[in-house]
Figure 1: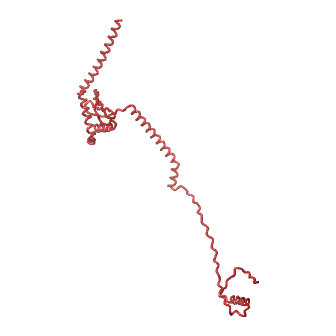
Figure 2: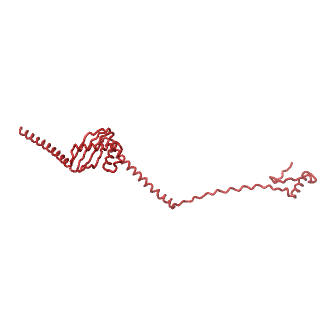
Figure 3: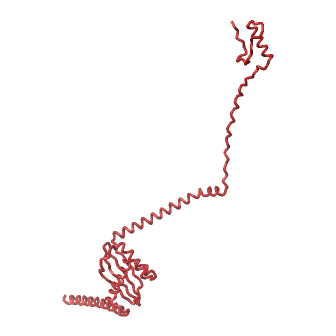
Length: 255
């Protein structure tokens, strides 16, 4: 029993020694890589803080145009400026993380803001030349889900709008030939008969009253007839001034 306990303690001790040995080897490898690049962790942290301060100052003073020719710095300024919309106001730097290998160094600067926190990633190549600066905002799980839902809705809405437009275009294929015929003159237009208004009936000719006073024979006959009806011996006392046609051809009898 005691022997088994000793064996277990020995195995546990060996495991702990191996773990510490691996950690020491990892640190030694990092230190050797850092020594190969000529940079220490403290030096990398100081460099990262200076770079971040410079980026903040340039953006706050709106001097981005002066660095438009430098692709790396211009991209870094754009990334920080866009991230500040979600970060809010810069409060402080909370932590650093330095990763060094034979290909270069990566420095993570943890930034605290009034609205969101962020991680500024600074990349250096094996010659310790600055190759990139990116600001990544930290969002909560709820915010990430909300953005994913909005992206899904926008994507589906765009698809439906495109489908509706395609259906409208297809429905226009029926009208397009008619429009082409109208422009090319191929459409035959049927002429509608024009109704001619009927000519008004000619007005009845006005009755022309014939003046018969110049017909002396008729005057003499009428005067003689009147004189006879009156019992006169001659027509000297009668003067015919006008002769008119009677409305009826029948004589009225005098009783």
